[in-house]
Image (tube, rainbow, N blue to C red; front, side, top):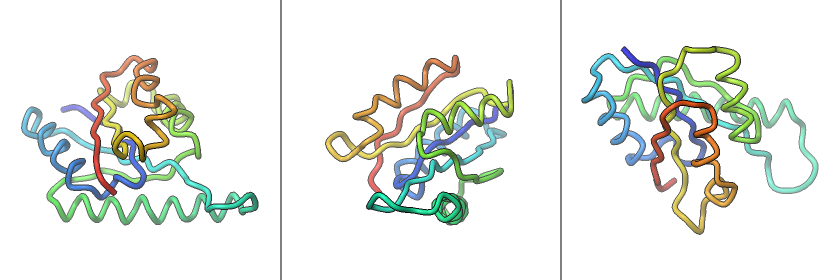
Length: 137
């Protein structure tokens, strides 16, 4: 039984991500998923960090419900740091050895800030297999 860390924001409710997670479960019917939703500050320069964190927590819970409605069991959904790589690192350091893989969902090229930041290849530095899903919000 493997545990996968799923990292997504605007793509967290997407059918493309749900399909990829179903594929993972087809290979390992007891696979478990933890959804990590990095916080995204609102447009502009001024914002309250607690407000951004709370908004991310609500988005994580809504995405968990949406994935579960598509038949994907999500063990836990949680907010993460504004930087997707730092969010990943913090989660992996907090739970060493807990995950057997990372599923990273991004928007398509041209729309995805995460792709411009090369998050999908940078995530490989954590030593876990990374599955990259291109999805629509």
